Length: 184
Image 1 (spheres, rainbow, N blue to C red):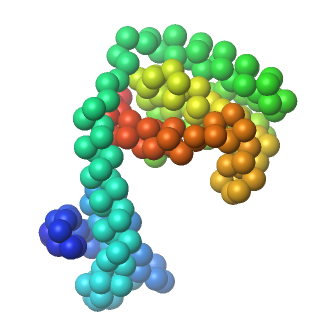
Image 2: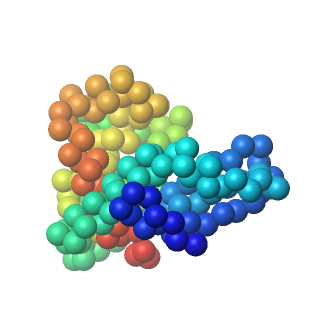
Image 3: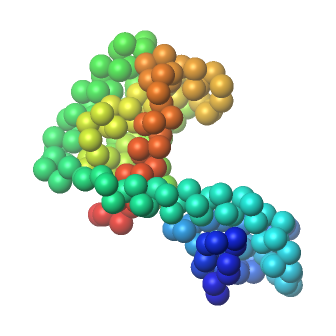
C-alpha cells in the first residue's frame, strides 16, 4: 500500500511475525512494518515515528538524485581491483601499526567492508567500480577497526587523523551505493 508522509509518498509493507515488539525498517526506499502476530495498529506506529520515516526517506531520495551525477569506473578488472586493495591494505596497516591477518573479497548486500576481531578484513567486490580515493577510504576505515571495533567517538577520532573530512567520504559512499547495489 502507499501512504503519504508530509509531502512524500511511500510504499509500505506490513509483515506479521513472531516478534515481541513492532518495528520499522526502510529497505530500498520502502517502509516495512514488522508487527507481532495479531497486532493491527500499524497506523499508530507510523504516526509515532513519522518524523524518523520522513527524514530517512528524504535522505534516500536526495542520495538517489545525487547518484545521477556520478559515474562508475567500468574499466578496472577484478584482478586489478584485488591487487589494488591488497596493496592499500599493506600500506595502510603498516602506517597504522595494525597488522591485518587475511584479506578476502565477496559480494555484500549492505556494506562496503567488514573486519573481524581476529584481524581479517573483507571487502565488497562492488567497490571495484568506485573511484580509487573511495576504495582507499574504505580500506582505511576497515583497518581502523583493527584498533577500535565499534563506530564510537574513539573510532571516528582515529579515522579523522587521516580523513578529517571523513563525513564527505561517508556521504559519497552512500551516494555510490545506489549505483552499484544491483550490479553483480
